[in-house]
Image (cartoon, rainbow, N blue to C red; front, side, top):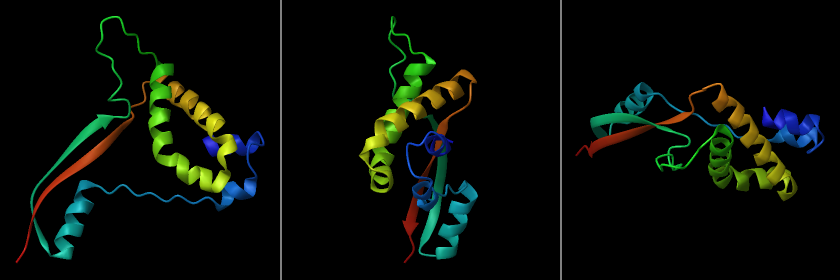
Length: 131
């Protein structure tokens, strides 16, 4: 969504967006279990999942501290920027990063206003190596 907006408003060349490929895959718990079992070198002793909100580390527990959707959006955008900025700079250059993540923060704030659930699911494994 953010990339489409960048092209429409002339921030980057459409060809650069078309060439940008960042495939990600988030397996299910069952897929993780199947891969471990199929590989055969380990025995899965336990597997747990826990969910954590994208803004989980934002201080919301202080008495006089007001956290609105704009602040939450900015916080989440900064965290994503720390991870993805080097990849984006390599493809699109540094010039657009401030504008890109500013727009991303605004889109996140809109999603938060709609009470969209934004969280990561973490999988924790306890395995033993088979002899």
